[in-house]
Image 1 (cartoon, one colour):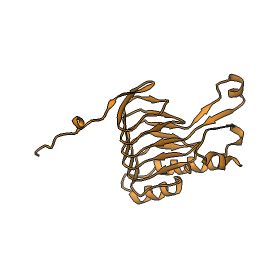
Image 2: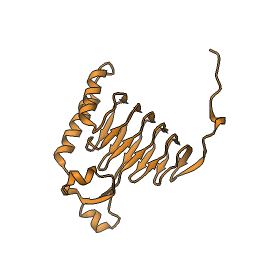
Image 3: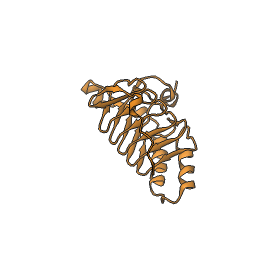
Image 4: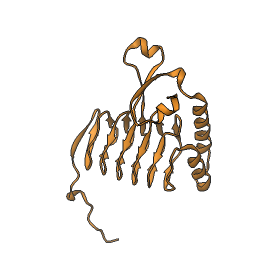
Length: 195
């Protein structure tokens, strides 16, 4: 199996930095740079660049610049996806974002990691694990999602949280490390207002 095939698998792996496809990373950096130079009025150009950059890009994918990613081909949006300013996605493994995802500013989705052993780390050994985000999720500002994490359908991750373990569906989770605070209930629904 070559490096790109390994990167596209939905499982954890480790590799040497020298084995990573640097040409594809250069392409992604260039496309991100082009995207980040677009005017807010250039909606068609932005959509075209996202279609070229991302592995799977639903037409209702909206990303505010500045946006950065490692490769792009490992990012998959599956419905309405709203990503706010200054998002970074280290997609050395697949990142799946379910429909109706709202991702706050300053969010980092980091599949990539490094060896724990200092000598291996210094030698360029890296780790990677996929990230799966269920449908109807909301991340507050400055959330970090680590590799190997799944966030369940309908859950909310509070601002500033660092998510190192799976989060179940239908909960509010906060903190560093992120922990479930409580389930989302009917009492959380906003009441209709007259305008």
